[in-house]
Image 1: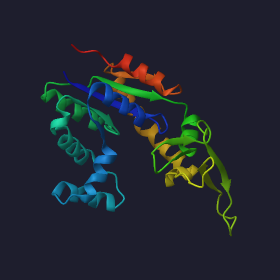
Image 2 (image 1 turned 30 degrees about the vertical axis):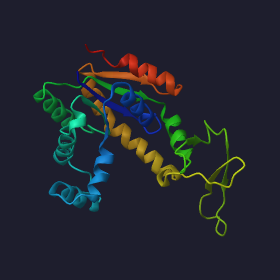
Image 3 (image 1 turned 135 degrees about the vertical axis):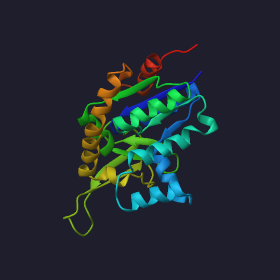
Length: 236
C-alpha cells in the first residue's frame, strides 16, 4: 500500500503538527521542500551548487530544478510507501510533473489536505507565537499563554524602533524565542499574500481532479487530526 498526501495551509494552520500525526499514524515521511533546499547548503554536488547559486541571487528555484530535488527525495528507500508533501507542488506545472512521476511508479496522489483558517486568525497565530528553545514547546500570546508572562517592551534608548515582544516562563527569567520574520507584521502579511496568490491555482487544479479535502483548522489539534484521518482514503 502506498499513500501520497499533499498538505496545504496558510501559516499558523498547524501543518507541522498534523504532519507529525500523519507520520505517526501511517508511517510515511514528512517531506518539506523548504527543508530540502536548506539541506543543499551543506552539499557539494552539481544539483546543490545550482540551487545555492539560485538562492544566492535571491531568486525562486525554478520548476524543473524543484522537480529534480523532489525526484531525488522520493527515490529514497523511506519514501517507497508514500510521503507527506509540504510546500510542494507550488505551481500547476509542478503538480502535473508530480502526477506523471507517480503514474510511472504505479502510484497517484491520494488526497490534498487543505487546512483552512481565517486569514486574520492566521496572522495572530504567526505574530503571537513564541517557543522554548530548551524544550521546543510552543506558546501563543493570544491563544496559549498559560504558563508564560509576556509584554511588548520599548527599545531601551530609541522609541523610534517598534516595541519588542518579550515572553518568559512564569517564575523564571528564561526568555522564549520568536522567529525573526514573525516579529514583522509586514513580513507575516507578505507570507499570507504570497500563500493566497500561489495556492488558489493549485486548489483549482486539484479540485478539478476531486482530490481536495477541506479541513477546518480553527479547532483543537486532536479534532483536526480526527478530521484528517476521516479524510484520508482507506486502502486495502
